Image 1: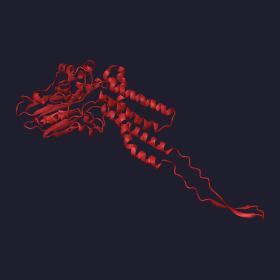
Image 2: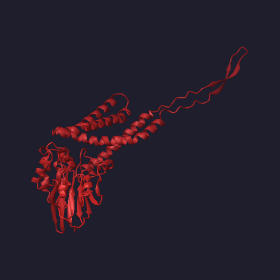
Image 3: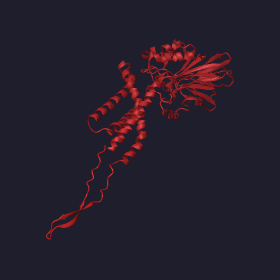
Image 4: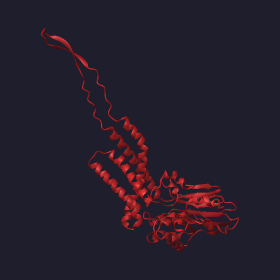
Length: 408
C-alpha cells in the first residue's frame, strides 16, 4: 500500500510540474489555458486506467483506453526529462530578459526664442526634451517559455515515435559465441525472455516470435521468465502459437508470473500441454553430438513471497562432474550465488536492457548486468533485452531481442 501511495504521489507531482511548465507559464488566463488543463487531466485519467484498470478488469473498453494511457506514460517521462534539462537555460534567459531595457533620455535641446518684455523684444534659449516611446515587443518571458515547451513537445514526440516503432517491431536476432570449459561445442541455444503477453499484445506478437525462433534452428530453446501479464483465462489464446516451437523448449518463471492471483501454476500446466517443460528448481541433461550439458532452472526470486522462491542448491544437486552447467534464471542477480556454486554460464532476462534510455543507467543499482554478455566473478552471463515490452509499448535504445547462442 505504501508503495502505491509513493507511485501515485510521484505521478501527480509530475503532472503538476508539467502543468506549470507547459500550460501555466505559456498561456494567459482564459479559454486556452482551461482547455489545455482539461486535456492534461484527461491524460492523467488514461494513465490511471492503464496502470490500474488493466490489472483489475479484462473489459475491452479498459484495453482500448490502456493504449493511449501507456503511450502517455512514455511521452510524460520524456517531456519531464527534457523540461528539466531546459530549466537552466530557461531561467538564465528569463533573468537576462526580465524586462525591456530602459533607454536613457537624450540631453535636452536648446532652441532660440524671442519673447516680449517691458523693455521690448528679448532673445532667450528654451530647453526642449524629446519624448522617448518604448518599442512595442511581445513579452519575452512568455516567448521563452513557449519556445521551451515547443522544444520539449517536439523532442518527446520524436523520441516516443521512434520508440513505438522499435517496441512494436520485430525482435532483433543477436548472435553470440560463448566458450564453455570441458565442452567440445557444436550446440546452439535460442534464448528469449520477457515476451509479456498482455492487453497491448495480440496473437501476432507470439506468432512472430515463434516464427523467428524456428528459423534459428537451435538445438533447444530457453524462455527465461515474464511470459505473461495476465491469467490463463484471459490470455491463454495468445500463448497458443508457442506449441509450434520446434526445438525442445524449457521455461523458468519470472517475477510477473507471481503477480497473478492464481500464481504461475496454471501457466506451467498450459505450457506442459504444449510440450514446454518448466524447470522448477531442477535440472535436466541436454545430449549433443559432441558432448552433454547440464541445464538447470530456478524459480524467480519473487517466488519467495509465496514460499516458492529459487533454490539453487536443489537445482544443482547431483549434477555430474565434468559436464558444463548452464543455469536459467530470470533475474541476473541470481548470478551472485550461481558464480560461487560453480555454474559455467547463466542465461537471464528481466532488465529489458533498460527499455527506455536512461533507465539503463538505473538498472545497475539492482542487477549486476543490464544487457549482453558480461561476467560475474569468473562466470559468464548473458542477459537478453527481451522480446516484448512492459508498460509503454516503447523501446528507446534497447530494441527487442531474440538471441542465438553458439556454445563452443
